[in-house]
Image (cartoon, rainbow, N blue to C red; front, side, top):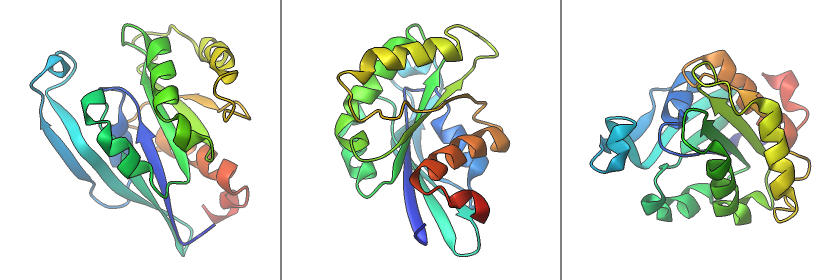
Length: 188
């Protein structure tokens, strides 16, 4: 694994991207939150408008730059900027949203060009509040989109995560890093 690596967190508003990066970062995160002024205010008071940024140290000489995208489609111009040079994608989904299946399909298709060449892992947040869909339901949903998203080979691992818990987020990120470089497990 290189000395400096970059992974990108994406997903809808409120899925836990900022919390996840904050939980795992070894530095205080840079966050570009602004007061929500549209329908986002129904989910949370502040929202990311450009990016979140943190660093995870893995091993003595390696670090992973953690970038979080805005969840709102109106900020999608940042998505291409943030994925440039990235090695993998963490898709965070909120199980309490009205249609997590639609969210998953939307974000996988929105990042289709990026994920043609990089691995993906999926973290499902707030399953403690709403247990449906289940992890196996999400696996079935992935099979549905696999035909038109040929880059999802192998099928991405899916984890239940609490974006506030460092261990949950670390397991998610380490699964992604392991798919990039199987030797990374020895370095962490």
